[in-house]
Image (cartoon, rainbow, N blue to C red; front, side):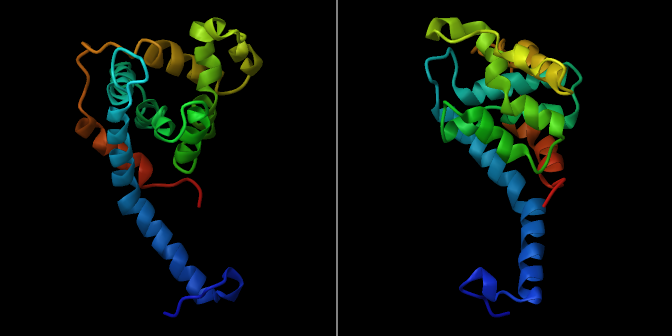
Length: 182
């Protein structure tokens, strides 16, 4: 099929082929790209006791051991994946990566997890520590509290017996091969 140089030149058949290619990507390539991107977190320590891959694996291991759903485990695993692009707004980046694949509640919990974490350290940066209070009453508030307080905040122990990245591949494949939106 001929390709086009400008979007407005595309025919219905060409756009259908593009849509089919995107759907194939979601089912096959996307999960493995996420796994590769997670591996990149191993290059970032950022002053913590462990690198960001270990932190993500610990966060996901804690979620898994707490009986979280596959989607929540993958959210815990990927909550900081945006740090490979930008630390200050990593929550927004991570949430956008997850958005086509997860519930709105998990999307918002990841998107705003920095507001929830601020309770632990924002006072050291002269920032308000009560930013999570602005989200009280939202459907995702308790999920964000669980993500941050039970899985994320305690997730920096370099000696913790984490589950391997490869052990999370089935959940990553299940979540990232079925987009909820296109």
